[in-house]
Length: 375
Image (tube, rainbow, N blue to C red; front, top):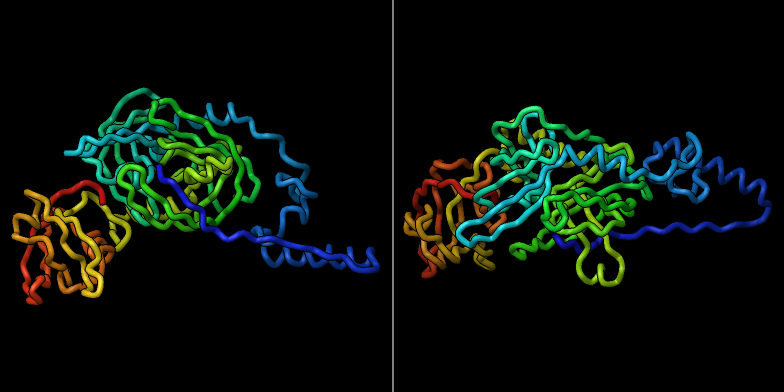
């Protein structure tokens, strides 16, 4: 589970009154109705414009009744899976959640749940079976991954909704394998932002990344719920849980959760299913050089800090201090650029590396990539 520091801007609205209240009220109402037509009721108007202060009130009728969390959870839980991963040689293990997309075992989850995993095991909540999982593809920048469960058949499939219809104040449930116990935890809450930006820290390796366009919910989601479902009152998935608020916010009683909008997640899934990789969307097994790198600073490129023993870079004679400046003629200016260049490669592909040596000289060599863990 990521810890997220919210960086979203807060908006406020003020109103003032002048004389001739009846005429002014009529003009204000007319203006609001005009704005509603122009903006298509896409949250450009404050909720109180038509709801008389109640976030569940609509133009179509009175406020909706409270969500029946138990009924919704009972409907959704069989459509989720528990994910357990292990990372060799460190022996680190972690747990998360997944959302079943197809009866034959395609599962949507968070990329950081499976990042670096050598072994992935999935336990289905609907039938109680365990499956080995393979990674079909992922987008690390969006924190979305797609898994496949070989041998799965007839799995209960989640109902995928749309995040476009969410509104501030909407009741939601966050459902996932909190704490890695294997039993789903149901966390009720409400939508507090539709486009939060957070700096997320991976609790496993302490890496950080910027995530934008997140759904923020007033719900104390917990580690293990990553990859789980954010669902509306009808049990439709509207988001993929990815982060919780940091320790400072939780200590102050401001616990929040963050989710990737399901519309964003499904766009990544469609790209993976198309079989066409991009700089951010990786498809199929991950190809690796087997190096740990850092930005080279003023000397643009990706500096090799460690060439991992037995991996392609090590076997090709790459050493610490060398800077990768190009891959197959594509200029490399940073670690991120190196990742993007390798993201569209497959294991066994041979790449040509241009290298800058610590003494200022340059060399080039070909390296055959190997199979590595996701990302």
